[in-house]
Length: 320
Image (tube, rainbow, N blue to C red; front, side, top):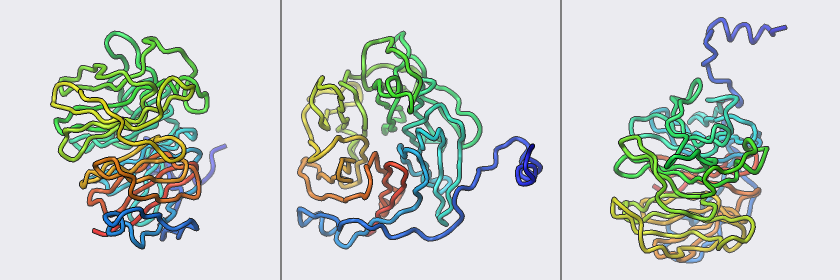
């Protein structure tokens, strides 16, 4: 029997599009964790005195953070819980998309729509943060995608995503299946809507561009010794990638997801929290997290770093 509360919701929202509220507005909580470890003078100017805050801690596995300027909302995925969640500026947390096909990475398109990497439908999709996302890519070069994982937008508006097989191998995060292509790669959806493999990578994971768009970064995270676990850099000239080189290796754990700030610093997840590298690849700081960290993203002004991991969404306020 439907509860009175559910009947009331459907009465005002018959299409079921009203976000379900998981947390009422309220302040963040100070996180009990070791202080930021700073290894250079340049990092001290940015991270000196920074303290990690907890915004929400009731997810199943948090991933794919992305700042949504149009809604002033931090969007992230509860992959195992099959939801896309939204943290609002007043501290409230809402379910934006429910019963998702194991959505992982998220990004914001130039027109303000959300883009999603789906393990379940083995696709990249698009939504306005309500309803069922519309698939925009499910095949590449004649074969079905594996399980798109992370996603970013290039300066020219093309959509780049990693296509490992993790979502085919872990029933908690996808639908068990075999790869049709036997390839794991970085893929690109051009502005013409056509999807191509750009470069093969052994189990690619996080990805992103330098501020000037001329350097492309990707983390390689094989689980069975097929290759080196590291973040690699490539030169991008607008047509092809070249000059592959190792950029950084995590002190502990793997570089799951990462983001790049306007300085060119790369902020990567690791087994210890967030590791910070300057543009030359020098390790300049560690931001410890109390649980296993998966990914991170900045807000529009880059005065807040949002960090996902395990059940939690954290925030690290930074100087303007």
